[in-house]
Length: 386
Ligand code: ZLM
Ligand code: CA
Ligand code: ZN
Image 1 (cartoon, rainbow, N blue to C red):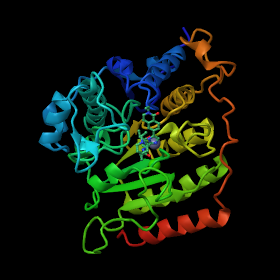
Image 2: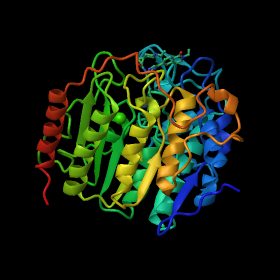
Image 3: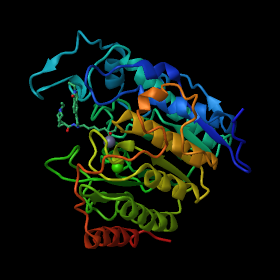
Image 4: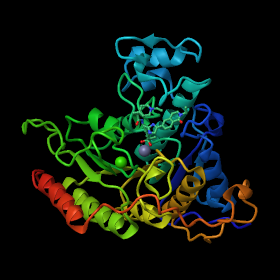
């Protein structure tokens, strides 16, 4: 038995329903729920499940989904089938922005209610004090809007989980290291000061999805709105590297926690910010991505850890398995255990820290540029009281 002991002094819970891993967005679609199977296999092969409370959460009810989403949108998701989705000539899309990015596939509603159910279960374990760090790698789908699917996301499980946390917590800090802007979460809490959203992302208004998240979009412009200065954005260029990313993350997250004083943190760990991702354009390695998780853990606040993007499945699985080990504070051997299922799938790189392909994007982030971004964030934090 190579099991790992439970961490001393705190509890980590792991929320995963294997039913959703079998789902398919369709041939060639970049989103592969199967990456969750790979993640769980690595986590279990190391014996990390012995160190955590494992839950197989139930699907969220339609009532629970309607705590954020509109009733007509949820009713649509519940009844639509791949054959009866209808084209809307006005918006040039299918209903509720479904289509190429957000296809209607068999089992879609089940998929949505399962990942949302897992995030809600995780949030409730935190608010019940049954867990200190709750992990749901199937969640983190940050683009979904109240009445619209967007960017592979249908239900915004993050918004639902934060609403649950807000029943018990005065202030929640949301941090998003997916390579895309966390627009759906930002928009949902745009006008409140009870949630601070902070997204790190590639930003290019015309060319990179979703095109929002400029440094100067920090909340309602009316300074009298409580939400003013509570939406923080860290727009980045192609090719940012490990040392730059870690320093930037720490230099920004540290003062956010100091000024905002959250009582809980939600961390979206989208793995498309890794080098070599099919859709991403950064040069961050798995250790550096994990360093962000380790840094946030050190604040010792109730922590909800979520997945998100990540389109090179073998790297996603390694990153999230490694980050699970960081959450439980276990040192794991870098070589994947010999009995890991699907080991053949990892080619020659049977280690948690493979050499990623960092040749595709030249680093366009200068030191001066990153310093100006940190200054821009500090300027926003000066508006907060306390
Ligand atoms: N077309 N197939 C990140 C969400 C990114 C919008 C350009 C759709 C793709 C992409 C879909 C198989 C998260 C856009 C793209 C083609 C309009 C995006 C289906 C390839 C394929 O081969 C593909 C037929 C598809 C989609 C690429 N879509 C790449 N980038 C983005 C959405 C989600 O990681 O942040 C969180 C989970 N969409 O750029 C288009 C403008 C639709
Ligand atoms: Ca992001
Ligand atoms: Zn993404």
